[in-house]
Length: 158
Image (cartoon, rainbow, N blue to C red; front, side, top):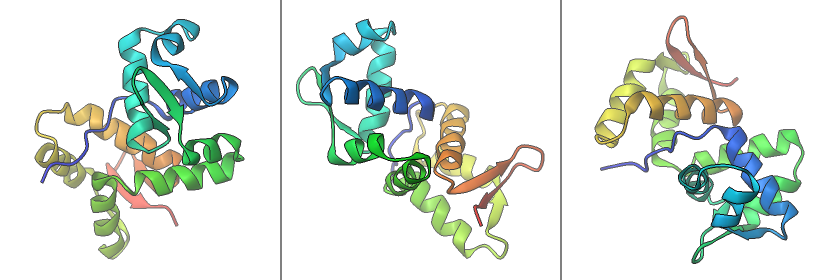
């Protein structure tokens, strides 16, 4: 079955959106977000999509609004933010699948090829390298796992 595609959006841009919303009474029109942050409208839509995937914002007509989880995240300290992020990414199928498999590996590690194959299978129309990049950066930020660029191995964070 397909998994939710991961938008090519770094954690910092999602966090930036949440902080921006927090400073604007937790909601704003998407068009205003683009204007205020000097970003292309399409880029803002992608960032909003990433935040929505993680249930940190809702998007009622033309608006972007912090969810309770989003509000909690924005008010949290660095460690708690990582914890909330980890909980949110683990609700996404790709993270769940890889996490479950890593837990069953003898050294809680595996080759990145497996993840790439999973991405290609679950998201056949996506750019698998971009999805993998997002997967790794989101996973690292949530301290869910580490990725060694030399050995191309993914391992659970101890």
